[in-house]
Amino acid sequence: MNLKLEDTLLWIVGVLLLLFCSLDVWYYLRVVVVLVRAWFLSPVFDITAEQTASGRVVLHDVDLCHMNNARYLRECDFARFSLYTRNGVFKALRALGATMVVGASTIRYRRPLCVGEAFEIRSRIITWDEKSFYLEQRFVSRKDGMVSAVMFCKQNVLRSSPDKILQYLCKRKVEVPEFPEDLQHWINFISASSKALRGESQLDDKKNE
Image (cartoon, rainbow, N blue to C red; front, top):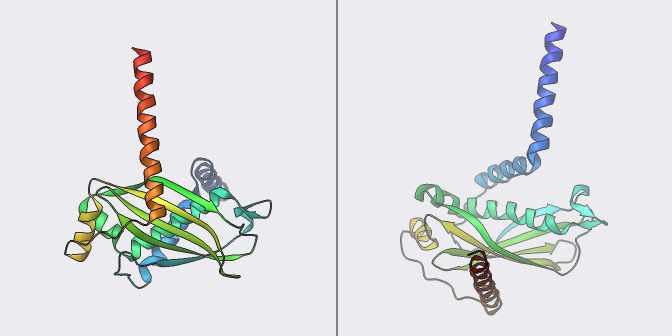
């Protein structure tokens, strides 16, 4: 009996080790927690309304006593999951058989978030075009209200469009908000970068002929 118990425990430990070695288990556990929590919060019917997610810098987030640069992007992921759950975008995606991927993002760091510091991520959909939603996400220190970092994110919609998602949610055509000047500059940069990379690809193809 004891041998069977030991074998079972060893098998469980082996499976857990395999999972933790091959997958970012904590990421997926956090996703589940974020989605469940957002599901029980009140829905947000204004698609462009700002939503707030709270957090705190813990030891595994840091290098040199402040939040690691990559952790900001990870926290933005979780904040977007909550945003899309509460405003119904995830529901619309499932109904339309669509999905979304990040097409581009840029983040500007203004002041470090230090160990133990509480912060808020304020996320909102700014506007959209025929293929993508454009979001702003701000990290705001709860200590003094300072915006520690700000990110733009281009969220590409696959197998559908932002317009169809909004028509599904609002049961009518929704007017596209204006593009702020700073966002338009960023979009122009993305377009110029894509054009340059396509040109490089064509040159490489010609060289290989």
